Amino acid sequence: MNATLRLADDIGHRLMNMFSYTFSVLSMIYLSFRTVMFDQAQGFRAIFSVVSAQIYFTGWQALPLIGALALATGAVVIMQSTAQLSRLGGAGMLGELLVAVIVREIGPLITALIVIARSGTAVASELGNMKVNRETEALEAMGINPLSYIVFPRIVGGIVSVVCLAFYFVLIALLGGYLVSYFFHDLSFVFYTDTLAQALTPFDVWFFLLKNIFGGTFIFVVCCYQGLLVKESPSEVPQVTTKAVVNSIIYVVGFNLILSLLSYVEQLTRYGIL
Image (cartoon, rainbow, N blue to C red; front, side, top):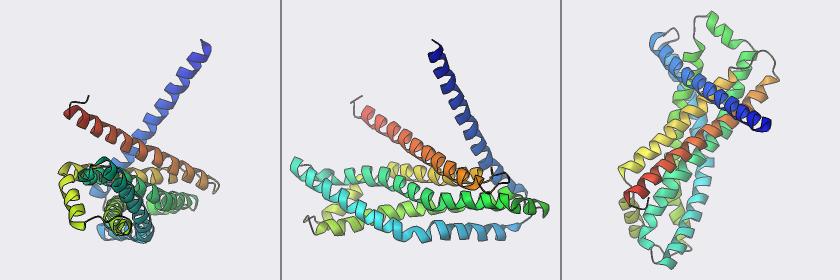
């Protein structure tokens, strides 16, 4: 009985911590956007320069890595899908399968994980070092709110970068993967593009955008939040960076999983399976 109570107490404590942490992260999103609208001490030109730098680092410099992974992923998925569907006589379902696997699931997830590994760690450690070096206090002394000059540009730059990188991943995976798989399977390009065009719907576009906008927002908000938790010691920087990576992965994977489950339950219900 005591063990059960301790377990229930531990679960409740963890849930309360999770809700409190989520509320703090959401509050940072609201406050950073509100501060930009009402506090323009640093000017939009300065904010735009930070946004541009974030897009360059997060988006542009990640293109080679994203392209290589997308090419390999697309080739493997297309070759396996073509081989299995040909055996079952369902080659016409190739487009639906690729849209479901690459556009809805793999593209947003792999892009988010790469951004967390490259840019999330960099943002968390950068802001942590700024706190240690009292740079945030210097900004406040000059009348500049760190939320508008540090957090907001990284959120906006992160969202733009993640959406663009995910689109680039899907494009390379579908087209580049087809070119690679063509050497192993004689698949007509006209048939391939027709099946993709028929399978892609406005719902898939909104589904794709929703996952990537959420991913870009929470990756950079969580990393900024963790970085700003550093107090005085440089030894805290790697600790908050690790927490930023773990929490970002939990939020991104959890949201993608919930959204995918709701989507597929709705489809099964519509087809009368559930």
